[in-house]
Length: 256
Image (cartoon, rainbow, N blue to C red; front, top):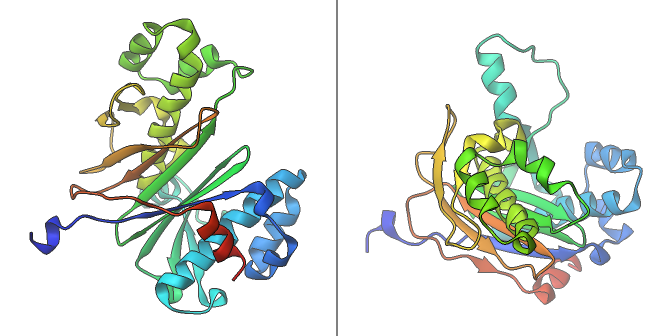
């Protein structure tokens, strides 16, 4: 096996919102602390705290440095594209996908949260995207489908038994957003532009309308139980073998 064909091994960490603790606040920098304080709901503060602290600890472990040495550059690919064409000024507050800098430069991360869960994906040198979605029949799934699903996806979705559609919808969403997050576009990239295989089949990227799509993408579902749908995207044509850390591993990392 050549080096180029060796499997990539991105790592996925899962934390429950109950893992949030004020003692983790020392891991946030000044800007992150300010943003955390702006969240009105405690649950949102907990998710943000866990996402940032878990990312900093995991990256520090890989880079072999203290957590406080790990920094992030926030870059929004959509805004960067607009700036290159002169369609947007450059005075907005930094936002977008976090790119590790300092000793952790070269590593890639993605963070997602929904309900009780915060997920972190880490890879070495290859863009990665993770998404988790809570399955909720209370949301207007029919309405959401209009601007989330591509035409072929919507037709396949409507053929499903009515009792399966809510879960399947969030399966579509998780797969599509994982891909958009991996590219750095996020939701601004347009969910309907991305077409994926139906949730009851193996995960695959089928098409990408317009520019900005990846040259290659590996996609897979992640198991978070019946109440959630989750997916991981890695922008590579190499084999991928995901390493999923146990809740005990996450608790140990957060306690370090």
